[in-house]
Image (cartoon, rainbow, N blue to C red; front, side):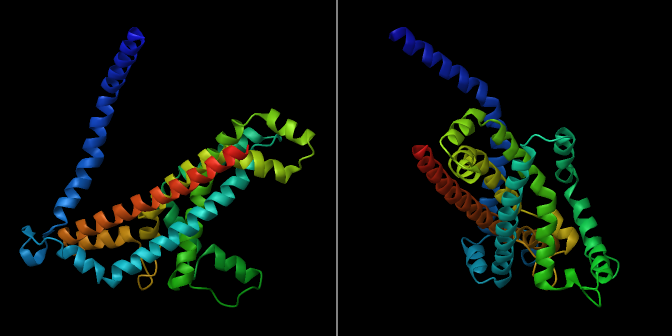
Length: 303
């Protein structure tokens, strides 16, 4: 027993020794910027102070509470994130189920399916901005030819339509990534489970609900959390397509932070915005992870 305990202790020490470089790298590229943002957020540093830091305590956070533009950008971020992630998950799951079936040319389809996600986001944003252009866009041209509209629609000039266009572009780009991620999870499910369940008289929907969905939930959790964090911090797609307009309807938090720091040179308030956004993101991810893990544990007991 003593030898076993000694062996386990040596293995743990070796594991920590091997993990130390990665942990130090994480501290350097992740922890330090966050701590630096926390530190800067309690100072006022802008053109009014000649860019010299002046300790202000929680003044930046008090200012944020009454900042209507911040709350508007937070709402726009929430709408964009919720709509895009939910749409990508549903479409990605459907595509993954199709790609998991055996058909001619499946390898080529799987390879080409990932291409939209591999393209640069800024390039995708520029392309979709032209597609939704009110005068030269493909969307208006198709609708005019089909007789559905009489004049071109200003897709990016209307607050609701501009947000919908940005969500559509993001869904088009990122759904393939979700589908490939879920496809990998589907291929790890043994086919024997479906065969045994079909012998008991289960139909396709029952197999999906009682076998596929519970066993695929870990991959769904990873996909949702990854995409939630990425969509919540979206910048390049919105910046290229709409620039936050019209009238701030598509100005997400990252764009507001960029304007605060780079345009108005308000570094202290910009740091406070970063801190609050980071805390909101951490809280949302923790809640989503808790709920999905709870559901996974419940379904695992049923299986």
